[in-house]
Amino acid sequence: MNITQDKVVELDYKLTVNGEVIDQSEPGEPLVYLQGHSNIIPGLERALEGKAVGDELQVTVQPEDGYGERDEENVEELSREDFEDDIEVGATYYAQDEAGSVIPFTVMDVSGDTVKVDFNPPLAGMVLNFDVKVLNVRDATAEELEHGHAHADGDHHHE
Image (tube, rainbow, N blue to C red; front, side, top):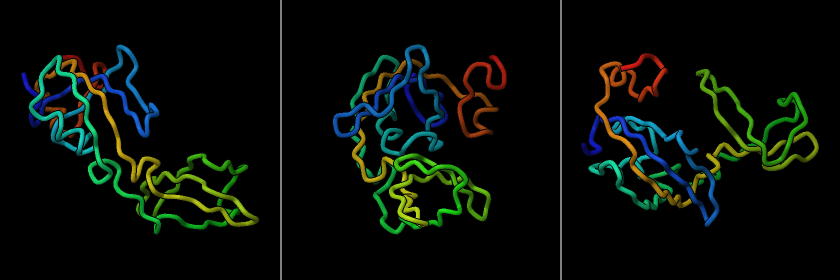
């Protein structure tokens, strides 16, 4: 069975940026996603289309197909009063926008009463290098299609 729209895919992956391993799946805990539903970044999803179990591939994803380019307009200055605790430079915090969506941001600098923060995703503007191995491909269930994402065993029900 090949990876096509509406297939549930299990894969082992390793993500390397600038030669440094940023993220990887744990042994026995593969990434499970639903193909064609933007569950994973577009460049990786596209590269996996048509692949089959046992395939191993190296995928280089440019920023526009990954987390986007860095946008300097997403760097803002907030008031020190907006933070409850000690502020750690380089740490990720979460803000809520008017719609109630949660937006992660990274603290870049603290000076006096001003906190400089970056709303860009940490990997924005980065070239992402994935090493991927396809472990399993199956048809999605009706429920998974309805929800738009894969259900790992035990999430909602067993088959």
